[in-house]
Length: 453
Image (tube, rainbow, N blue to C red; front, side, top):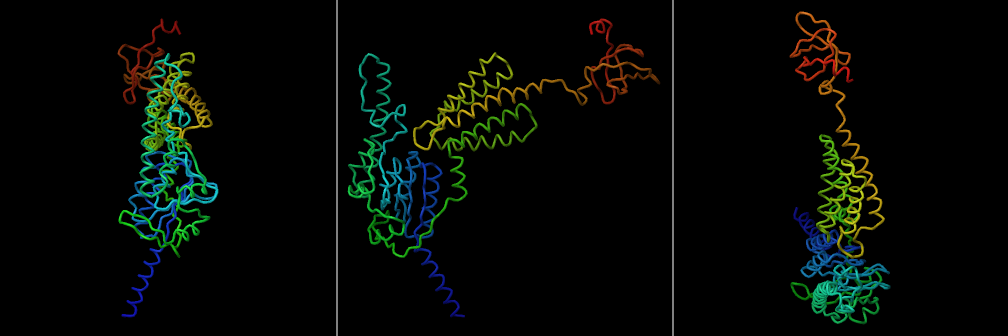
């Protein structure tokens, strides 16, 4: 019994030891978004819980959202597990937000034929202008209004650039890397190749693979929140952590194009439900799509003016179907819809924004939906009822011979018991005014009405 307990204890200790000697690899490819931030934050938390020796972030990004980037950097700075950012595979890049993440990491590494830099906060650049355009002054003072507007934009851009350069300099000083070049990457949007970055003390290692990276950083000293440690990366088991269903869902609905489509599906569903109360299915699906779209859009740099223009455009196109205005409401609504779609995502970050390839067919589909489908649905509601008890109201019939003091009439080829406030006689034409159970309230049709008919 004692031998069995000892063997179990030895097995548990060896399992824990083997489990701890691991390097968790997290892969980010594409724009830095709320989905990638959620994936990295939870991946680093899981690595800490598993007592992993190292976290490696394989990075290939053109940039991303400032809020998501700062969330990732805060997690790296507070991580109890050393974090290595590795720009890979060959040909990858760490542009804009990727450069900040690289500077924040305990170890910065790149694969051959990769590059980093161009870290100017372009999402705030006026009119999508080139970095550095904020230093250009108006050619003359004659257009004071234009000059004032440009000055306001320049002041906003300067604040953003100063804030970003101070942020990346603080990261460079924390990790002992080249702070001067980091500021140039922000202010001048310069870039470096992997070889040049290593020579300029921007990165620490050039590695051909993750295994090569682990060999090269073995014995390197890094500073964690708890203090300085020496990396022991020999014989680590590399475990690649794939995004789970939550990260995949966020990545899907966090795509601007998908969020845009969900928004429109939600609006279409609610319009159709309101046009045909009681169908339920369009209303339920529309509500779900609308909530998912609003959740995704609140994570992005959304323009509320653009959202309002989209809703206004759809409302105007629906109004054209209900109140024909010879195209004025319809064309105005279509224009508002297109302008709102362009303005909806208020950023110039690569990987964000809604392309014309999506806006054009969606605008055409929306116009057809509003003019045709909604118009048909609303016109169908205005048609007279042709079945049921309500259909009898207003119908005409002929009084038949009564029996036992009861009056009967033939209405829609059916025999009905009828009663009238005025005397009626067999052969008279009557009109149904109401129904009380199985008895119809009728009134005689005068000769004048018959002659008119």
